[in-house]
Figure 1 (tube, helix red, strand yellow):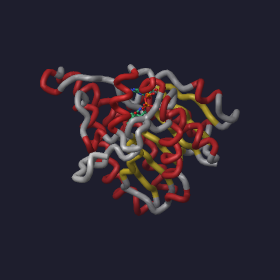
Figure 2: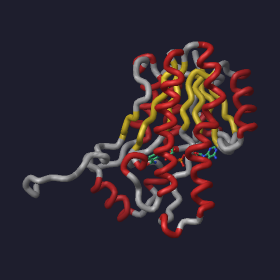
Figure 3: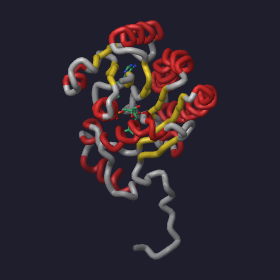
Length: 248
Ligand SMILES: NC(=O)c1ccc[n+]([C@@H]2O[C@H](COP(=O)([O-])OP(=O)(O)OC[C@H]3O[C@@H](n4cnc5c(N)ncnc54)[C@H](O)[C@@H]3O)[C@@H](O)[C@H]2O)c1
């Protein structure tokens, strides 16, 4: 049984990912700013721990890895999922400090949270890394320029890590969620949700389980020859809605 470290595990996609990976036989290090006790409480006893650290904090991250490896064993998969998703500011008037702050969590934090796993994975000749990006990386997202830039940065990171790690059999991939029905998203005003749903070709948001299933697949043996991939989980929202045909 190998260990999967999931950041941002206290809720949303991270929590669903912990549950799915546990079902598939992984031990779980459920990591979040203040830990992820509730997530761990819903997992089998003894095979999961809650770990508190800030992905921006290098020392705390390395210390967390030491604890995880001594309590559960070597980290065989990292899901870099922690992120700040809800800051809205238009580029022209954005405080440059807000730009820096968002890149620090969503891009630098993702790298810092997976970096301690790389040497061990290389040495053991096995490992899985999945970064949770967003369709904002490829399509843009009005009012979220720093978020989109950070999520696009993750794609470059994934491609480079995939190249560096491929000779050791370690795979590195990204998932790009579209509109996911997390508690936060579901709490948005109905009118905003209706407008967003109308833009999704599948006319609904995904469940967190639908994203978790794809992440778990990329962590599984079945995905052993997939690396450097960017996998949208977006109900087709990244497709062009252009049509030259009849209105219906
Ligand atoms: N919900 C969506 O529609 C959607 C769409 C595309 C991408 N995503 C991405 O999915 C990931 C998970 O998002 P979610 O929707 O489940 O949101 P969420 O807010 O429920 O989860 C994010 C988690 O990250 C943690 N976190 C934030 N900053 C941290 C830090 N500095 N150190 C450690 N942990 C930190 C938060 O505490 C939180 O538990 C994010 O990377 C987000 O950008 C979400």
